[in-house]
Length: 393
Image (cartoon, rainbow, N blue to C red; front, side):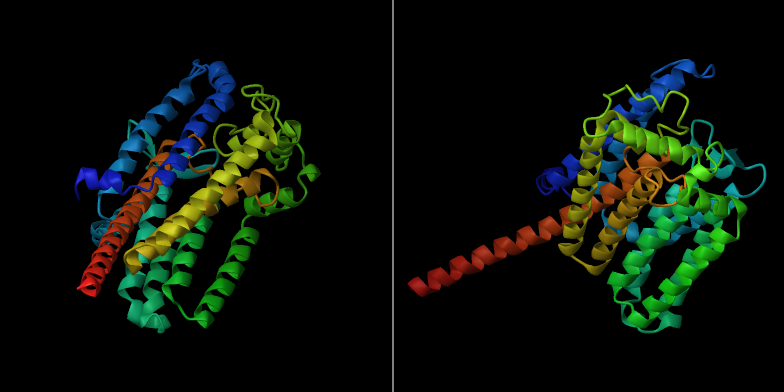
């Protein structure tokens, strides 16, 4: 921890602004996308039900963000083995009959009483932390596949398998992408990266073709109108929503597709509602915001004071960005539907809290980098003044 004054002085405020813009925009869109469904649901009977819950998670998320922004990422790295163990045990618990909670054919949650915990969300942060920490420790052994790369890859494979079994291929893929980015920038040999990439592609194809529901999603993604009342239903209504929005949209809260046509309108398909209600303008706002977030994350990584901070910042950034790309690709028909949410915008407590924890760590790296750069600038000024003084003498 370090002084609050120094902490606030060295915060990356452009990053903070983009985080607040996206999360507050998401809160508005959650209400707009859910009030019809919540008002008609006899179990809820409150149009603002999902809005109120998302507002609570947003407030808690901001506390998590500021706490993680003050908690040294280096100390967090030391806790990585414990965090990984907890995550692995929770993922195991999900697939144990009687413990995991099943919704819409997927068993991804644990019922903690006051809310449903989704361990795969926790796996995002623990795997990025673990990969950045382990590859930093093994920096001098990355030329050796067996000694440098194989141990973390085996643990990644274990976590990937447990998440796919839920099934949650989208989350598993986003974790794989983030860890792959860390591996790339850690300095692994090109031949190893090429081999691992080939194995990952072949493995993904085998997973898709090896399960009926994944094959159906693949065929519906390529031609949703072949089964308009079945596997293609969600994508067709998502495309209708996007097409209806045109440039300016039909107006906030005026979506037709959220009124019983498009399932999961406030979660997986919230971007479709944004496109329908706010049009191309709303879509561009979201895309540009995530592009700015990516730029800031890469810049923070570049300015990180050490290798662990650099790899961790890149992993966090591309974990969030890959999830956003997968979500937007799915709702527009460019990628198969995976059930993955849009970070900071979609409804969901576990996802929002983990995303804020991620961004808090990213802010901590930015602050540490700003402090180090600030000290360097002060030293340069002092040295310059000393040289001027000596020259004058």
